[in-house]
Amino acid sequence: MDVRATLEASGLDHGPISVFERMRSMGLEAPSVASLARVFRRRGVARSEPKKRPRSSYRRFVYPAPNCCWQLDATEYVLIAGRKCVILQLEDDHSRAAVASHVADAETSEGALAVFDKGVAARGVPQRLLTDNGGDGGI
Image (cartoon, rainbow, N blue to C red; front, side, top):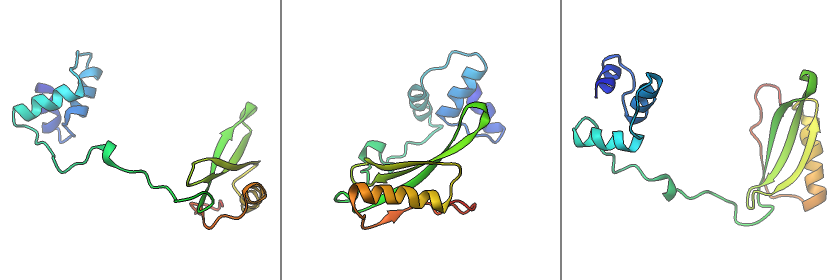
């Protein structure tokens, strides 16, 4: 409880996760986060939040059928000697299957069109295409 009080007095987060991490960083043997939460509730220093839903209750959204929606994303990779490339990927939002991939020097509209053309050649035209519209000059 002293670690929690010190965190609280400093204006820092003083919940069970923060207390657990602080105890470990101090070299103290810390009980589990769940045990700390139970102790805090029992002593009346933390409230239970029954309105919070458990993560297991959330349902993942998926489109109802294949080719209803594809998502386009790009990931930068650093190769040997520091050379960079970008891997553009199309994913079907129904099955999460990879529709097409394309390697490019940078995240460009040309690369996006190339991977889209590959996807259309393999699976036909999707009803919808989602991108993050990279506001930094990317796709």
